[in-house]
Image (cartoon, rainbow, N blue to C red; front, side, top):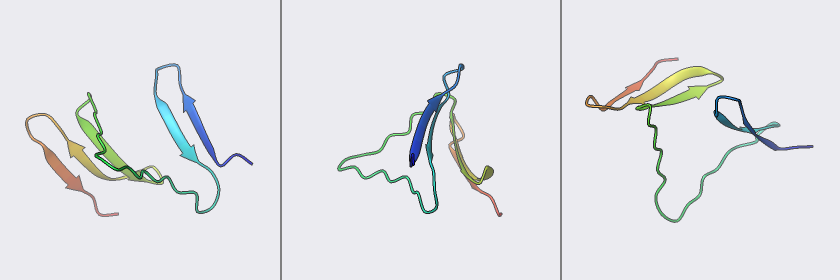
Length: 67
């Protein structure tokens, strides 16, 4: 059984996916974690439902949505 997949579509979108019940993705680093989104926005979703986002640019807004 494969517990994870890494795929890239023809447009260059990279997807890291865990498979199976309780399959978490853990980032455990000694230093910093940098998310560098040239599009300006970082989105957070649960089961494809957007629940929060950072909006970059001059506004630097953080939204949390009620689900």
